[in-house]
View (spheres, rainbow, N blue to C red):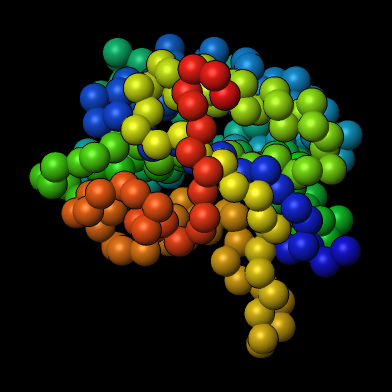
Length: 221
């Protein structure tokens, strides 16, 4: 099986404009705990890894060193009331780490990507949502694993008064006529979700998205 041809259940959450950020430690800690079992299951191939892009008030990247999926690592990058010198832009989590995936020539078991909408070149504009979150789990992890992820995300969607909570099924990437693949799940968050550069300038209906998504009920997902 080619790296890109693994099948996934993919979930999308667009948080309400006034939602508490998921990078807030009080929000992230229970959400991460709800995924600990999945990350442990994926650990059969290797440990998970996290990378976060954040900036200080002068616009310089903040180094966090190596981050894993554990309480010590979460505490390094999440924000608390004492956090005044960091601006969160984005986060990725791979299980197992991207280096293991490359070595195995197999896409990750679990993937998560989170972005702060206000830092995506839209400062000062009215926002329809404040955060975008893409989570994917390989279908060969089994239906129970997918159900666990879906339930964790449904609970998060309710807490964040999510304006869009949706699901699609697709492969990690799409074969390219030039060899390799393009349109990977890891690229969806920034360049692969919406048809237009500014998703806040039009309604968030089916025609706003590049992929076909099925809307999920937040309270009965």
